[in-house]
Image 1 (cartoon, rainbow, N blue to C red):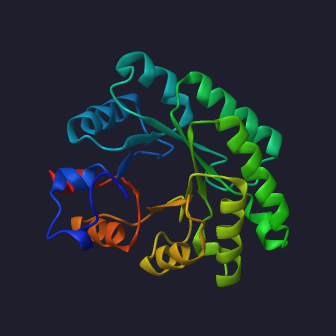
Image 2: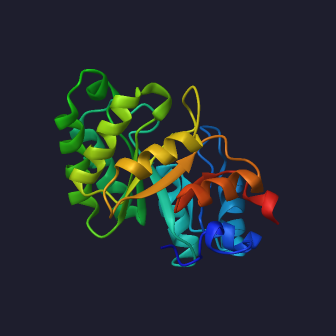
Length: 225
């Protein structure tokens, strides 16, 4: 169970407790250093789980803030169809630069071709590179059938990843409560859930935490404060 008990087990959650579930996120391609710097300042103030930022800013954040916050970044983002070698190289550089957590996008073309083994092997290879660092696997649910979503739950579990994540926020749709419930039914006991995409209000955040999410990708953390 998360350090902060789920809403279903207590009468209410404070805004700051909700913030502990949030990866405070800015992944827009036009994000400036000033905006990223502000994001980091907010993350420290709000005590969010991490900041989730483009890979090119990792070193600069690490140099300025050190261990004051956790840095999450994205690999194979947002489409996921790079070669395995390219993704592994990208991951190694991100970790060397100072990333603490990796959010990778699966190769959705492999899913659509029914090659679930290739997806599993890719995730396993990425986890080997990550080691003790947290690996979150973005499956981009808006493009998947129910059968494919269940298959991805198995792939993430079998490959030893830490989280299954609903969405990039750049697809045709974001997280849904129904997908979180489906994940919860089919993932292994050691896999956690991250919801991302379209989560903008405190009520949204509470619903996803109550549904079983241990992380929420969100650029709207300010609504809590």
